[in-house]
Image: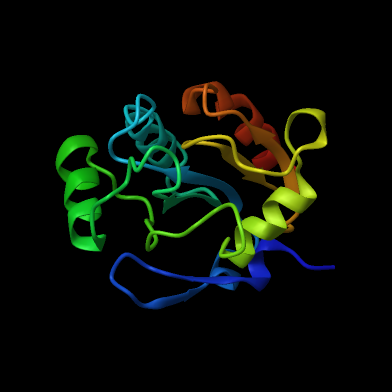
Length: 161
């Protein structure tokens, strides 16, 4: 069975990252953007990252410019924005597409295995979240309106399993 650990993605620095390095960890995978009304969620994502530091948990951010051109910067600009404005220290990856023919294979997998409302697969907007169990299977998909801090109890439950 294919899991999220079977994929790789480029870091913001342009280095290939094998997601297998996160094997055994609970993951919160989020498509992000710097100029979105949900951008303040970076703060909540960073708080989760810090709250569960030292536990088998990671937040993984995937910038995407497919929704209203809200992530127009290059990798250096994205990284500087996240660090300067929200103190982001969790792993951020190179900008990707999450929908369409050029959707990143990881997002093709996430959407297929955790469809949205009424079974639709497409990502509707920035800050859609996928919570992944420590075996690499997808626990649930959350709408952009779901605040990161509202996922803390679910993360605790998954960490306890």
